[in-house]
Length: 410
Image (tube, rainbow, N blue to C red; front, side, top):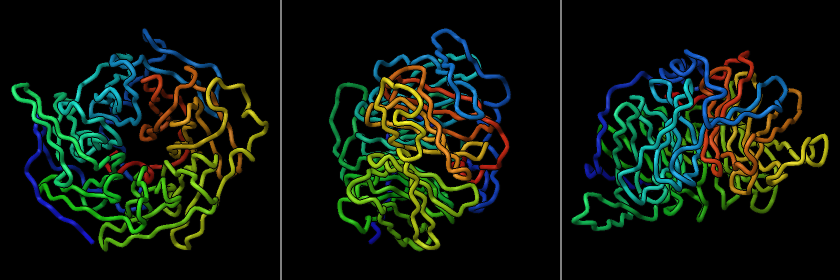
């Protein structure tokens, strides 16, 4: 079943859509975004006021550098996107703001959402360089223009709960959709999870057409979303212990049960550089899974069993278990993943799938709860952390073309 709607009821606080570059075919090399090129044009700050740096390194990498915390206390920054001018942008979930860092100077600032109950979640660059994100509490999609700091709220046409605020000059939109993550797809639409509706949805910016696609499994809990192999949209079903792909052309669902029984809470996704596999984190099982959509076979990497010692090389002040969340391929061909996003972790992991080896490193700030990573600047791995409300990065080798793993618009 497909539920379609067209609406022009966006709560506009600014933003103009412009045509963007055509999307590359799945599996093909993709040019880096304008923002990634601008970010890479100059050296990044390492010792600006308020920064913190570690000393330990992963095999082949540099130490972790943490930019200053965003001004909003307890903002809970999570994902990182790159603006056209090279600035790093993160959604501050609890702070209800978009945080911006100039990586060359270390300067930080916040841009509050116009919807007081919005709570920004998963974000991605759009074809125009604007940063689009789900509003977890706002029952909407948000659109942030980093050049003007203007934000547009595109309210869902389903299950909205408007809150009258007159005579205050604000407009509050809320509802049970719970859009936790987003991705752009090859059909030019932005897709989003809707946990409260047990569905995923899509929005076509030019026509303002919305569609809703119910998930076959009841109470699936769609948490993470990324572009999947073959130009599909992939999700993790956090409550159903499955991963799934959705064909944006045929609207066909394919669901795959995770071999480890129980609730592993899959909470991160990335496609492989050759577009053959879909990797995902099994948070509560301390495993990383690899799905081959052609056969339906899932291989699991048991991170606890791969450790050289019980504690993972150091005595961490955070959760010591290697509970993986989001993961990305680095430009050295290795998988990097965050540990303990929702469980008090403070490590970044490195999985070499060719050598079947695991390495882990503590973040400079303890119990940082790293949330998501960005791999679109070759030679760097970038991430933001819930508990510290900071964006961090470390240098990695640039030896492998991983551009197929980038989000569609960088």
